[in-house]
Image (cartoon, rainbow, N blue to C red; front, side, top):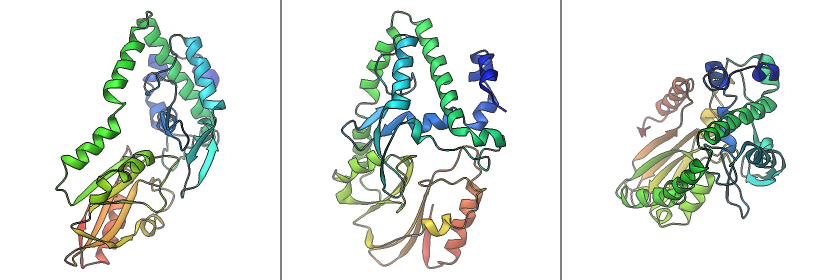
Length: 299
């Protein structure tokens, strides 16, 4: 059982950052995935957790300054976000943390599973605090923060625009493009560009706005008859039991005909870190494909 008293006596690198068991339990990586960058529906747009490894560029000049920003962000900042099945909800970043299930991460004990949400918040705070301690100790004059802000401008500020440019120009001749781990905010941006005129941007009917990692298929309007698109994702998802670690948004499965009447079964899939979902998903998709022999199959 992971305890707060257990964390208090650990060395920050060997006892926490390099603890393999903590990694297997996803107690720091899961909350980072959810709160590192949050796409809101309000004027704020994308917001970032105050941490060295996010695109946050606020005051992290000292441990005290960072800790004040971190607490306020996690527990006091109301955010309007897209939830499951398109629902809109207002919550704090801490309120977005999902329970971690032993079925997917068996290293977790039953007791840890029961308190996995507050345990994630604790581990996330420790993780972020260690990073701030390291950089402020090694770069006391604030050089690290100035460098980070320069990197954000160079690599992040125009990232979505650059990706859309690559899809529009470099892959202009592609008839089908398969994307994974796509944020809702990016989908909205893509739908407002000329890319949407060339491609039907297919996403799951139950797109996940909380986890915000979605698989897509871009279908060329010149090659495919978009009116024939039928989604089969839920048919496959419903066949999985709780031991199969597939989250909403990981899989998109659809059938479609091209303009010549040829039928296709197309799948865009983002597997989990340990590959536990790969075989059951492939088996389920293959079983469906066997029931649709007239369809060309494309993973």
